[in-house]
Amino acid sequence: MTRVAIIGGGISGLSAAFELEERRRAGADVEYVLYESSARLGGVLRTEHIDGCVVEAGPDSFITEKPWAADLCRELGLGDELIGSNDADRETYILVRGRLIEMPDGLMFMVPTKILPTGFSSLFSWKTKLRMTQELFHPPGEVGHDESVANFVERHYGSEMVDRLADPLLSGVYGGEAASLSVRAVLPRFAEMERKYGSLGRAMLAARKKMSAGLRRVAPPLFTSLKNGMQHLAETVVSRLTPSSLLTEAPVQAIQREAGGWVVSAGLQSDQFDAVIIALPAAAAAHVLRMASPELAAELAAIDYSSSITVGLGYGADVRQTLPPGFGFLVPRSEGKRLLAATFVHNKFPHRAPEDRALLRSFFAGVNAENVWPLSDDQIVEIVRSELQQIIGLRAEPLFARVYKWKSAMAQYGVGHLERLERIERLRQQLPDLALAGNAYRGIGVPDCVRSGRDAAKQILGTSE
Ligand SMILES: Cc1cc2nc3c(=O)[nH]c(=O)nc-3n(C[C@H](O)[C@H](O)[C@H](O)COP(=O)(O)OP(=O)(O)OC[C@H]3O[C@@H](n4cnc5c(N)ncnc54)[C@H](O)[C@@H]3O)c2cc1C
Image 1 (cartoon, rainbow, N blue to C red):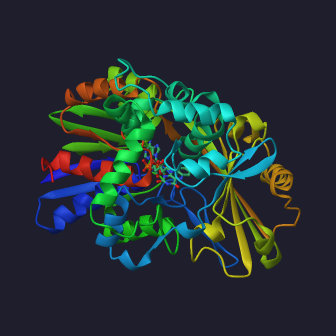
Image 2: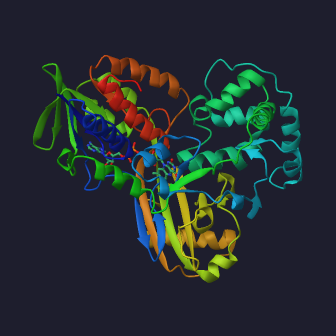
Image 3: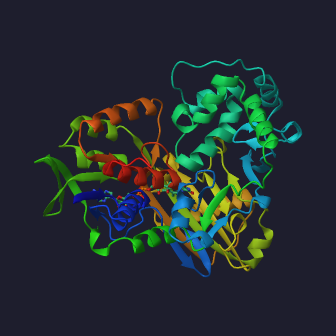
């Protein structure tokens, strides 16, 4: 019998437990115990149902292109619960000098693939539009080292593109700054396009051509979520696990190698295992590993995390009628606001709000989240309301308001992240029967976390598929 400890009950740890549970049911001689420090399982996957609205405290969806979360949902029998974003109403706005400007059609992240909409858009100055044309002649080649996303984008399109698009788009995903995120870790496809084609514009056009030469199919929605919210995924995984294997309010202090196995210490209890899966944010993983491998702990501790705050505001039908169409807006740093973004949730997904309700989700990240952190929920709601009034003229009193704070929950893949991962992997291999999962490594999104958890379980069982 192989006994496995899983440390961390977010979606990464739960996915690892699900994989082990499936193997156990299929006859594998394995048993697991999952340790979660808080009273609830699911980590940042948390949903509240308020006044008929589905209010997401943490992630509101996942990228459809990455299949692992949707695959897990289907395996759990949640296939009918999956919903796609309303991409027909996908307009997203960027705040430029106090005015919301629609992102032009055909922009793939920051790469223009349609000339006319970008050419006529007031999102970019003529200087940037000229840079976009010149970019098409960017010669292929590889920069021999990692660099920040800001550097990379600036080399291709200039600093306005960094400020107005790259930085707010990435802050929305990582809560960090384009100036510190690694292009190779965060935008590997773009780094590869540059190597192969030089111009990102030409690379995108070539990819589009290839796609349209292949089978024509209806494009899947950009984002996928669950009718009843993201917490439903975590709850359904939990319902499939062995209840006696799940320990909540059980923070692990340390793990140590002993007698050919691992001893896991949580509170006053210690237990023996053959293998351990650490599915924690990097700083917590570093703490747990500090005695077993100070070197590995130091590498993990060096992975930065940023904090974020989401604020859900519910309104009546009158507000719903007056809001702009589309998914919401992003606020570049140069606009001097504290809000990073707001989503018109009732437009982005079906089933999120009744017809007579508008649901807005506002987002603070990084330095701005830290700055408002000490304030009371009421004060934070006031800041959101004041900025929403300035940006979209929204003065109405919300029917409900909820503030959710997430301390150091989003990993920041800084310049050199991939090299750090190689060092981490070398050090991990020196520790037998230890696997790492979570958002610190190769993807911060829910699908990547699901994959990392399941892969960690397979690694421990010595199976690769
Ligand atoms: C506000 C927000 C919005 C996001 N939006 C999206 C989105 O829209 N789409 C998307 O794909 N991704 C999104 N993400 C990212 C994604 O949700 C996370 O990266 C992912 O859910 C992390 O899962 P995890 O299990 O690795 O970590 P977590 O959810 O952080 O879980 C780790 C768990 O470990 C526990 N723990 C900590 N220390 C110990 C210890 N010593 N012993 C035992 N347990 C411990 C914690 O209590 C926690 O439950 C968002 C993240 C945040 C914070």
